[in-house]
Amino acid sequence: MAVRAWGIGNYPFPNDDEGTYLAQAWAVQHGELAHYTYWYDHPPFGWMQLAGVSWLPSWLLPDLPTLTQGRIAMLPVAAAACVLTYVVGRRVGLVRPAAAAAMLLYALSPLAVVLHRQIYLDNFALVWALAAFAFALSPRRHLWHHVGAGACFALAMLSKETIGVLLPVLLVALWQGSHRSTRKFSLAGFGSGFLLTGLFYPLYALLKGELVPGAGHVSLLGSLKFQLGGREGSGSAFETGTDAHQLFADWLTRDPYLLVGGGAAAVLALAVRRLWPVALAVLMLVLVALRPGGYLPQMYVIQALPFLAICLAGTAQAVVARLPGKPHVRAVAAVAAALTAVAIAGPHWYDQDRTIAATDDNRVYRDAAHWLRDTSVGDRSKVRIVTDGVLWLDAVDAGYRPGTGVIWHYKLDQDPAVTKTLPHGWRDIDYVVSTPALRGERTNLPTLGALLAHGTPVATFGEGDGRIEILKIGGDA
Image (cartoon, rainbow, N blue to C red; front, side, top):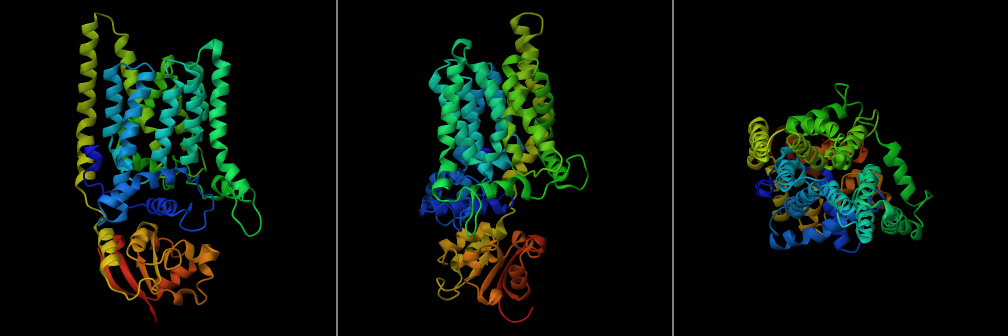
């Protein structure tokens, strides 16, 4: 946890999704599901949890940028995932040292460290999914544990729906974790917990009259259709130049040892029956990631990391256990395997984790947040300013009017509730906080492009493509 916490507000560079989820958590704290029209882009339970854990950092450390406050709030989520990795390792037959090794492999992997720092719904979903596996594999085989497994996995999907690909694997774990004579009750209990918990989401949409598409309103099924087939694919991971290929390359640069070693161990783990659930989880997630033409998000790998670590530790334990000789010989072999792993991966992990802890990529965002809070621009309740998702909540905290006073740049051309307040288009805006994420959308959003073309810099933070500029709108370019 110290590795995750050191410099947590400085690295990595913010992803606009982080600001979006923070703003949606702020909306939950104020009695809404989203800071603009909730259009069922994801189930809301993820940012409901974020709302529950983010109030303490914002109360204790009010002077920090909201991004840093939100990342601090992710630390207990990361801690829970590490503990549950140990528990699941024990439930699939790992001895205590092997389960602890799996937890350390997961906890110290540079890929896990950097992704756990970020405010992603996948981190919440993973905790619930690991809890579901822990319940399903409980050695007590209690019916209520299997009901709990179903409820936990429903909460995982209500945190981030993409983790639903693990449902078949969880059923395999439940089959292993239940007794033959009572298995039908276990399956029925699991199904009850899963359905009764998961159906709250479509029931909400139904009661709102927003389950199916229709004129003048958003809908759950319409958004699901967009998520499944309306998004541009990431291409093939095997084709150079595609987004998927670049994403795999970035993951492997961070940590080739856990990804490649864990993937190979997952294949070998299929020979060990108790390891089937974690091995199948890895293989299922890899197959989905490698499917051609699908959309592959940056944070997708979060779901696979603990299962990769357990596969590595479990396979090593299985190999050592099959060595001939007395117990002390196997103990020496286990220590030798651990030292070999440290010698191979340790230097790379140390360099990567040190870079994560010591690098400061986010000074420009901190400076922009301070500008929003400290610079006088007149009556902030009447000033209209456009920001990206990351700085939206900083502007709200600084006193700008949420929604149509401080405007998330995506909403300029896509939300009728916003566009109807802009009868003169870009001329109705006073300032734009021009960030890399915002400039990247200028060709897709005509009003945003016009704003950037008619803005005059009044403050600039940083240089090059990573700079942030405060643009005052008016006149010609």
